[in-house]
Length: 209
Image: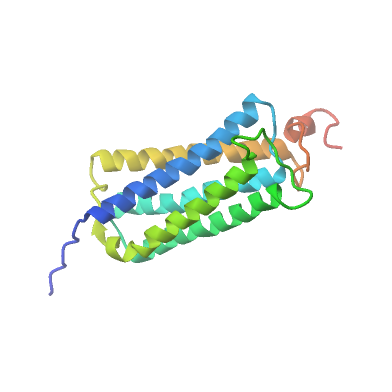
């Protein structure tokens, strides 16, 4: 039998692991910021805002797939990179279109106060596109980082950081899904201009019918 060749380590493999962690945490925190604004300002998001938030979490899930693979296997293959970053790119493209639709086309709603002259949907579009460019760069370098050992399978700061961002994403995703359910209630579609949480209206006596 030919002995298995040990997986080599490398700086680029560790850099891509940390980038995946930052990518996951970054988008999870952006979505969490939207939730904080939603509950503190009493401003339920419009359907396009919800779509953008879901795209943010799906993009983070793509990077989280890479982080989880490193935690489980101690290395990330080229196939795993393509799976994770491919999911992220798909979500970023969808999010870019949704934010562009809201900010530019007639009938869109530029919700929220302008920051540095740009409304939140335009900032979201810029973040989606910048992230897509960053993912393209790390995909171009994936051939140099694939199958490189990442010291995340055992105890240490790599595993601690990876587990932390995965739990953060799971928490934000769960709260986001609960918020959408409360906002939509027992209806097929979200209201175009939401002003209340339909669930609480539906469950009151005579609320649904």
